[in-house]
Length: 169
Image (cartoon, rainbow, N blue to C red):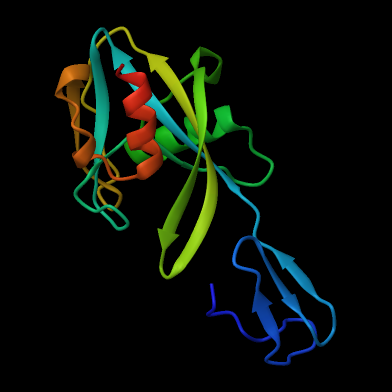
């Protein structure tokens, strides 16, 4: 977070990071907050199997992940789930069918910046297994795994590892 040095208000090289959530300028008093971003992850479940995606970009390229992403301004978490599932796999869902499971804090490291997130985990039960159409820039494959076949060291993000530790027990 030390990469931001120049105050956008006064232009001086006086911007300081507090180490947690804000930049401030001693010169003019400007403050910029770096609050948590909302992110969603969706457990798509059929019977005892879960659909996981394999990431095709960093962070976590090659690791397993749940479908999901960041919430856009003016969007509910459920709307984010529907949008992300369509963008990543061309899946159309009814957001009212989503069940919220839990929330967990996370740090998403992207291009030199740590983004504090609040990850919201949802579950969506489907009537049958399917093979979605993948957005290849984001995903390289999907796999259906039984709960006992999921290994935490293959999961891309710490919050998802914590989630699966609770969800699988």
